[in-house]
Length: 296
Ligand code: NAP
Image (cartoon, rainbow, N blue to C red; front, side, top):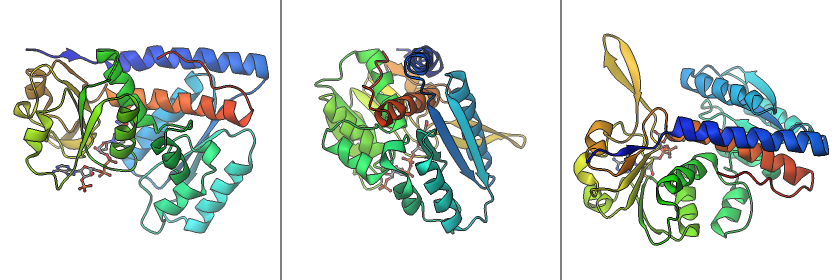
């Protein structure tokens, strides 16, 4: 079997266009220009790339993009003051602080400092609580992207066996919550899971969010299953060069799976499109407008 490739880049382009249209409508009808502020601390090259693509995409969907770069040595208090200024600014509807942060800064404090209504990453404990109790609120971008891509293959996820490898607060746990809301039967695996290959073989859909290059092998996958690869790992490509690979051994798994996301070009671009949706949703909520109707 050769898997169908779930083209995240293409799907994200279509979805971003729908978000851009909805932004235009909100701007014209209600005179609100949704604004996203991105804060980068330090010079982590990967973070620089992510931030650049987020700010470019913000402008591309007709939203206001603000960018704040702080030195790697910035004291925690100064970063928290910057966040508070953005919390108070009515023209800023979404705030994203790019992780990871330098060691002198407590990421948890930073996440909790962002006003929940402007928490477009969806990492605030209040946002996580809303999601886990099934109440309306912002949904973290990467898990939302995973669900949208899986639904492109399956339509409904109801009754499917879903295996999520990884239990982080930003990907694995919220993804499992969303899968439950979609009526999938969910297994969450992690570094202490016994016989992970056998657990994965149960999955009609396997989501890999581990941070281990090409860990998921072909014989871990049930023939015909869908594989969504969240991982972004930089590895050596020989001759001093590097390349990005996922958490899934792509070539091997594509021989067995029914559908698979590539890395790059799968979950990554869809995650950014979901960030745009979240910023638009936040702008609507802050102006007492109904949530935007953007078809996936
Ligand atoms: P994380 O916080 O480091 O969590 C990794 C999870 O994987 C943990 O739950 C860990 O288990 C589990 N794990 C690690 N090694 C394992 C092993 N050998 N077997 C089974 N489970 C193992 O990472 P994250 O933030 O969730 O990110 C995961 C990956 O997704 C990374 O590659 C990251 O770069 C990528 N990512 C991509 C996007 C995107 O837009 N595409 C967004 C966010 C993250 P324990 O809990 O037991 O330690």
